[in-house]
Image 1 (cartoon, rainbow, N blue to C red):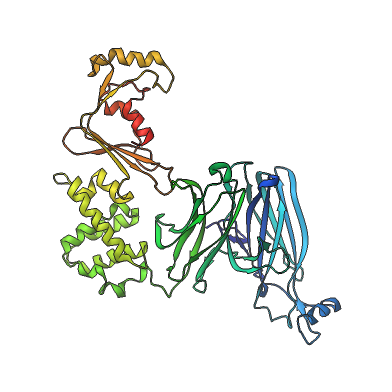
Image 2 (image 1 turned 90 degrees about the horizontal axis):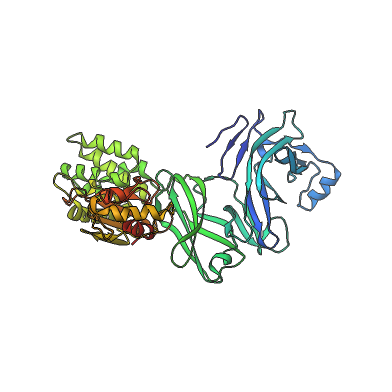
Length: 526
């Protein structure tokens, strides 16, 4: 969370709390949208003022007439006025500027100010990176204006699929009279905060998808909305929606709902993924928020419930140590260190049970036991299939990957693979270099026909790993032909990447710039 001298940035899309010596406070955020038909991006800005932070003055006759329409009976009416200046610059040039006075609703006294009021602006901007400057000045205050500055990025490519920002909503009602809050038949009041308290039981989000028909034609597609924990990026079960959209089009406006009544306190991300019918992720956007929900127990409050939980059933300390140690494939670095320190102690069953229960509560507060039982089933599998003398299955590379990402969608298991070396598989497009490999292969262990003998290996493919491109691949090799496989290379960004890995797997039968048959298998995922 960024902090500035006069404000605190609160929302992912640049939300801020202004605060001068008089505690003038207003939440500010913006979202960017797009009109595909005219190839025109535009920006919406939102300001939500806390009226208690402003100075209310007695109003004149005009305001009194307006107040009568609000069923106010006396002439002692008050309101506050804020001078708002918004300037957007592209380098040294001013791309947009607006200065205006924003008047609060009229009140019956200068202390009847326990409310907020909203201002929204909408204006067009071409693609670019801008400097945004917002100045707020309470007209009845002698204090200097509060000024907020930040970068504003606008980028939508013509005729290419894209998605607007995700905008949370506090209220949606059918439109009766068109106004600035009207959109697609609804009046949408934006929720201008990243702090969601226990009063909010339903998270309402609005976003738009553009030009998807250019990618998938008029075919149906899927929108997945879920909530992830910020600390580990894990999706919380019970907090996800799948929407089947019947037809891709130039603009698709979506109002989404997720029930968060049972979402415990914590830091989360609301994630939206657009997928085709093959479950390939085409687009992804996220919005961070902080949840406060003390009525729902989170991991930090688990002690009082451990005694009646599944964790209390694990009473053998040696087995408990084993389970704690086996969490490392899915644990954060902090959790790994804490678990290892616990396993070094003895006669400490209750504390270990508490840690174990908290661990699973943080991942699924609604049903932590189901997550643990699913993990235990996978743990049993890796111990049965991947263990090695003095090395449990979860400590092997294959076991760790299996536990971290789940069962692979495809496995290719080769014990004595012999691949043909083809001309023209040189990334440098150098046929003579490839021919050199064929003619010299006999001295390197392959026969004169241009074949390559590989050490035993397994290729695992995952159709979809969150945050990765479709068809992620892991390649494990048995260097000593002993049955112990280590991870040699992967297409997943956070995993092992070995330079010239196929040359290593072929025992130097391939030159560094040549792709053999196993390299082709890796690239296509089978």
